[in-house]
Amino acid sequence: MSGIGGSEFVLLCLIGLLVLGPERLPRVASQIGSWLGQARRMTRVMKRQLEEELDVEKNIGIDPKELLTPREDDTFSPLHAEEHDKKETSA
Image 1: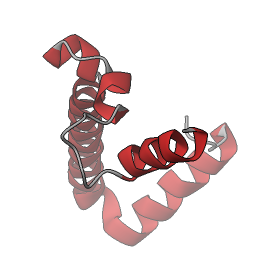
Image 2: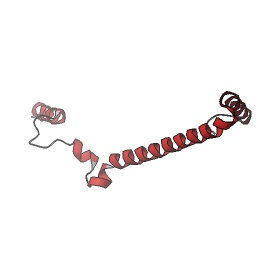
Image 3: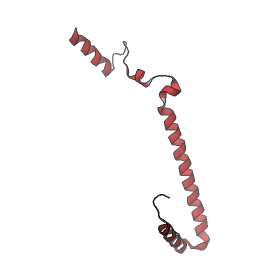
Image 4: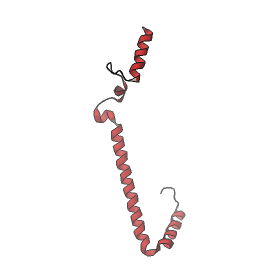
């Protein structure tokens, strides 16, 4: 339970009961619970979307290494310039 021990939880409940009173404490606890549930759902959705977007090979059918390989007509790629320099120095 997120690093809170049993005695600490009881102490927090007692403080909440003293501050909020017996009428408002259940309503506030329910609202906090719904916020936490909403945050967990949003976290799961964002994690799933990120995993889908990062899985390029599966979704698009392209090998990610293929995206890093410069093409012959690519004159602006730093990788292309490195390959071209290597060809000139070896020739």
